[in-house]
Image (tube, rainbow, N blue to C red):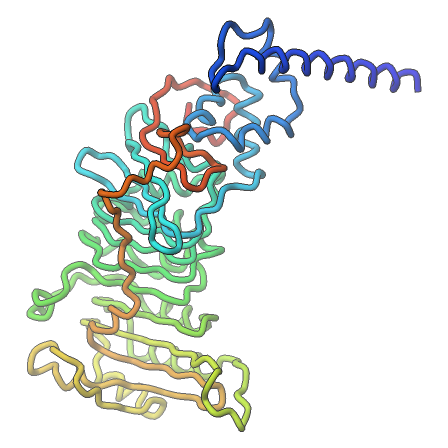
Length: 432
């Protein structure tokens, strides 16, 4: 007991000393700025504080200052690394848009659920700029992730977003940009990162997509999807007049993996995928129709019960035509003619374009549709949110250049460069 009493007395004395030091330091702050010199041994004493109050301080620091704090001492560097994985983070559940400009800078724009811009920042993918993963340490990304203009899905960007300490839980990921600098390895690692949350994956109007980028293995890294769209940019009038589309290596395995989609609405829209076969489509139909669903009451009138709709669209897929589907699945599907579907792919393909194959299960209120033209792509096309340059979004003058994790309407811009320091114990640092 004597030893315990002595330790308690020592800790109380230490707390009193730190309290006096902090009080003295607080008196030197005028209008948010330090006047005079720091008290003797202040940083040493400050570093001796327990982790919990220091973690609380980190929640109120702008992102640039959090990065700078990692250079203060090994203790702060270790603490920030730990907080990146354990501390509750600021939620961003709207839309985050990544864009690249001609100068090689990456712009990150944040929008709320209503499409209004919240914050923006610009950082470089090379040089002495703070790494993207450092800027996002204390942010939880949800909602939608949109890779827009330029080489916004380059390996450097996807590698940064795949860091272990980042919290990324989007439900929808849209690639709508030049993906010539995207490799299978970086894309697969990114999809593994978002796999627990992602439900829909769109490659819409992508440019410079290589034949080897997408495959069953890569798409499979995203887990069970409710929606998949693969739509290269070479569509429209130019595509309708052309019979040549680069082959995309997505096959029956990806299609069959979506038969168990758990949402009310699901879709599989692909273009130029020669790996899809009529046999694979038949296997999908059989698996989808046998899936367990809640049974609709016999007196059900049709109102108030959600219709489970599954849409399959195969456009310019070498092995999938209306005739091939009829031969393989004619006993499972009903053939329909679509009236007034608009412009179709030439005279020879018009009748095929007007064909739709369906199967419907009234007992479980579900419907499957198979189509062959590009119009259905529009129904699940996600538009990129745009900024209004005429509106001033700088809500907080106290933090004009930083992202404050506690302030939702805070604007952040370029981060200052810094001199790299080598922390031997920092296993996940980009500051080495």
